[in-house]
Amino acid sequence: WKQASGRGRVYTTTVVRRKPERGGDYNVCMIDLDEGVRMMSRVEGIAPDDVAIDMAVIAFVGEAEGVPVVLFKPAEA
Image 1 (cartoon, rainbow, N blue to C red):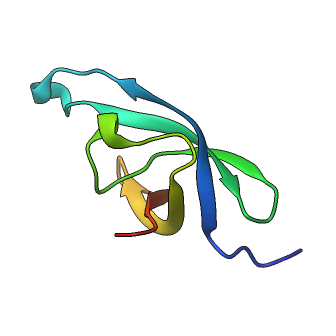
Image 2 (cartoon, rainbow, N blue to C red):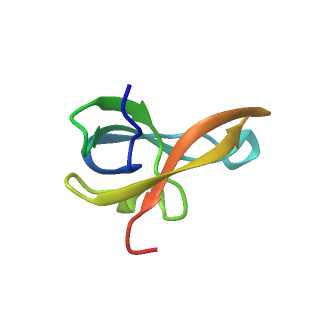
């Protein structure tokens, strides 16, 4: 086991389109962690269309549908 730094880069991203009354659009990304592992998550704090491949991100524990999950935010934020 190795403690992860929480830092990584967006490997790929897509936007899931939903009506505003259903929660609005969101992104789904594959994130390459600095430790060499790839995981699926979302980038929060910016518009889904603004998430870009190779964007530097950092992990945080957030909530999705009432469940704690690992999410990411832009490293510059």
